[in-house]
Image (cartoon, rainbow over all chains, first blue to last red; front, side):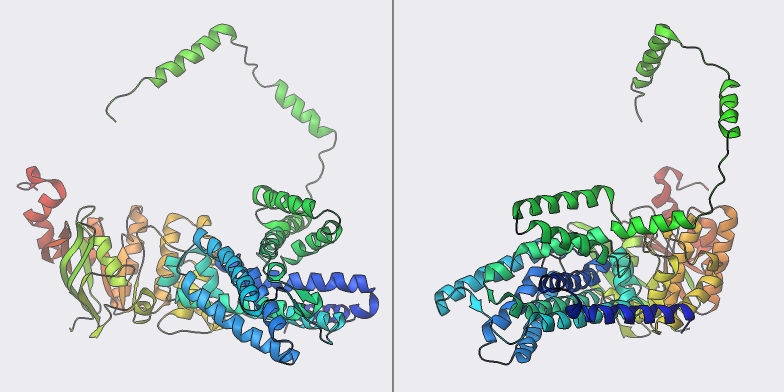
Length: 355
Length: 245
């Protein structure tokens, strides 16, 4: 291990330790905020693990988050909480395998729409089930699993998802996904089993989302299908990842923090404006920030590292003026010149025939 | 020498258009087989069928006696068939070496990340591209792009190599370099199929030539003899020129 990477590991360990100490350092409100932040951190990094490398935009985040949360809500009276998490994990894995096998053969737009449709379908099916079979809508999750524990579990999961992402970069699967994202035909020609690589990564990513949902269930206390299969979750995750930028593993973090702050500010007082601003941010990213905030940071870093070109002082402008004066002056060509130009253009427009 | 690649009765139709019809050919290790014919005669489709980029409708493909007709593209790569594309296909946004590493890591002799990095650098070095390893595709010149793609193909340790107009569009100097690369690959025992319009290269490199027209094989034999064949001249130039030259 080089000195640089030792320092990086130590710095990260300190960062994790500080984050682990957060429950003792902040108020209850602050902790609630941090839980929300961690929740979206894991969701977004997990999303970027799959969609950032393969460039398959997934809107199925809410589906898996919802599966996790609702599995816990349905089972929490019968099973201990960790057993519920286990069941959520199994259900999430099965669902992701099924969805992966079915959908990853379709590409681009269809995959996006399918992901969105999946979470809507899950929501409607669960509503139907609850109304017609169990005659309830909405479930209570009352377990001795307080906000501090939720926070620590999410932090653990965040460390895990970063670890997976970091290991992935230098692994066989990581290289395969990078190449698939850039050129699928070439990936096959390099010997990569393209569908398998995509399905495996989709499962890993979705399982993280499912577990986040499961851990968050006790936090909500009361939840309905409408609440946990909320498409806003999927959209927020996409916008956070794009705003942050996905060329770096830590990129999405730069998108998560500002958007969570914004949602804290607006979602209670003016939820309508939150959606509007989210939409505007999305447009700004697409038009002006294709590489996200990470791109801005990298550009700024490049500028800082570049050697400064010395100012040219007073001599500079003087030289410029002299250079301008010493050019031959082109006389204005008047109306005749204009007619000449139009004529030239008309002649060029003549059909040249038989090309 | 026994044939390494044997193609028998290969047929592919796109709707009503039969692009490749009942094509058979065989290539031995160390042999360079020329595959020529006018545009649209089905040469590239035939390569697509052999490499597994497309599935054939009928016929068999054997490599070293093993039937690979039903295998998907990536498994044929592991059975040591690889190719280059007419329009270079490499990841456009990644450093050149990443595509080559993917070839090493998923090819016939897979290696872990670190070793793959060394090996990919070695392959790029042999093709005089080591200094370009970190460049993206659009930062490379045309000839460099073609060589990087060849490096990706070689990274999977092929025994059968299909080159789709790999020598086209090069300057005379570059052509000579490219030809010596193909020559040395054949000398290492690879079976090469060369789809090419550059007749200098076909004459110099190929011991045998197969001529296709409209999906059919219209001639086969030693390069000099086939290229003089009136039928071939007719396919390329039309009936009027068939008597001359």
